[in-house]
Image 1 (cartoon, rainbow, N blue to C red):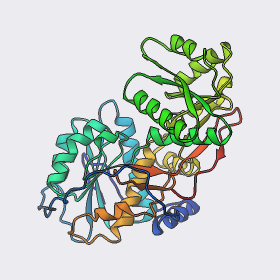
Image 2: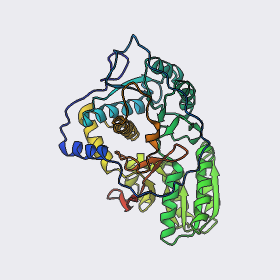
Image 3: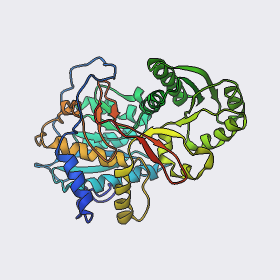
Length: 395
């Protein structure tokens, strides 16, 4: 159970959607049925794990002898409060759907600061941290958590924030780009172009595009970057001077909606591709210029069911990242079967080759502690998006 007051209530409620519950429980009880194989992630130096300290008695939480204390660190105030609350609410649903009683999940607000939130969570004896959401917050949390021997399963996609005691559950742009580029290559496309924003996301996108295209036997014939504050017209004009089979627009759908008509006006006919950012923008299907565009992301069919359950309980539509809160709790519940009360969290279980299953499909953590996901390729269209390449059954 969770606790009243400033902490979000995490507790059980009878699931009225029987088929949805049955599916999720089945996913939870068995390891993800994927085939093995070498990991693609680069290994990182390993260090001896820190010595876990026993939880001390706390004034704010009742004493737990049969349950594990798990902290959920998300923003409940500030500019990202909506996303944080969606993640917290989805965590509630996960415990309700699994009817789990082995975990006490307590939510701490990172809005005023991730450091103070982590300090409170650690002082109250939590042996596992789910969250925080942002890379900078992860860095503020990882050190104090490591000193107490507490692992962190973060919702961030900032690879630079990974550490010996930090695992990243967030959606990775590099994986999305690799999936859609390899799919395009399988369709005979060899000449690629890139339109990328300046900054860290653009650098990741451009580097990945070049690496994957060359590894798949293709090449990048032009790459144009732009400053979002200055607009994309000049970059698109420069891009259109080259002939290419496919162009990656590594930005939000809003930018793509502006760029694609400009490209077509200047005679560029290449296949349009995007990244996982487009998965959070369902309105793209209604834009005629985007019809036929591809992007790779997790399969949304199960998220649609979670979305329905969420609306029925909370009366609003969740942010797309809510699934991370749901899947993080599923992960904790699954591993709790081999986690003795009072013992340190068994981090070795996070490296299971078979991986895990959740609302966002199959995933496993690579040697660099980053979640590797099984992604589908989606195609936009007036009748709604369709899956043109199903998620692989193995990694």
